[in-house]
Length: 409
Image (cartoon, rainbow, N blue to C red; front, side):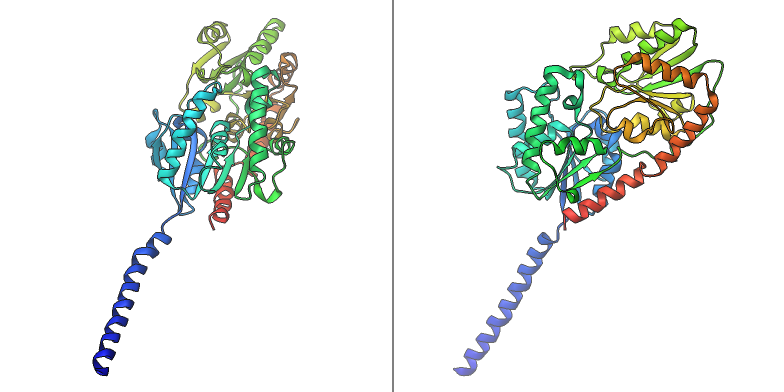
């Protein structure tokens, strides 16, 4: 009997060991599965034009990355990063409480299905939505990526600006107390402005210096400086970009007999309440020296044909990509004294910085460069050196990847 009992005990021990081994094989892979990061961004074109390096950096952490966005024409470009695409309509445009509640409900269901380990929310609407859901979903690591403070930072935005400022204040006050949240901004001024609502600890803030540009794609080249100087503007055709100020400056200089040309690249944003109408754009381009090109795919070739870059922003942006691309191309920059623009362009070095919403000062700066080719060349070379000092795609990838490796540890 004793021998039989001992034999049975050994069988039970072997069975237990085998069961433990099977369970370990079934459970450990779950524990070792790749982290999952969801990137929340309103439009696929926005993700493709500005955030490919950011998405590549997230993929480089070894995580499974999925982009939650409205899909239009840029799916293949985003999938080329190695990320998965989850179609989702964030319903851009003016804030409407009932509409936002519906979007929040759909987003909550998506999070319950995907079970992410981290979320990277880009721009105010996704950030506000995920902040509102913070109390009813698991506390994943959260990266909030502000590409400027939008209407909240634009003096001329009026009542809309006040609404957005209140939303931003609510978001920052809630998230700055959450130790699992990290803030990514594109210039030091935005970090300081947010500190008015509630300061994030310094170790939870990363200043990225824009969306990053590949300097090899935008190689510096000699300024054309042909019979007429050409000034280029690239951006969405919205009033906050200040394209109307550039037209006013052109009219002033044209009246003085200062000859030059303006090339406008970009399309209206119909879901933006500050969009410039097609009729207005046609009116501007009816001038002899003004050409509205609409959307231009080969932006590197565009800047090679330009002598001066003009970014007459009224504010609210992080760090305009057009400014970085022009700098990579070795073009001098005329811009305004607003966050982001003044962070990159130092007055008298990479270009000229003028007061915002002041077409007369803008005209004066343009006239100075138009009449001084040597200063144009010097400032253009300095602009490219400035870009190489910390504003390239490689700089951005390294910063994002390093931070998420810490957040996911």
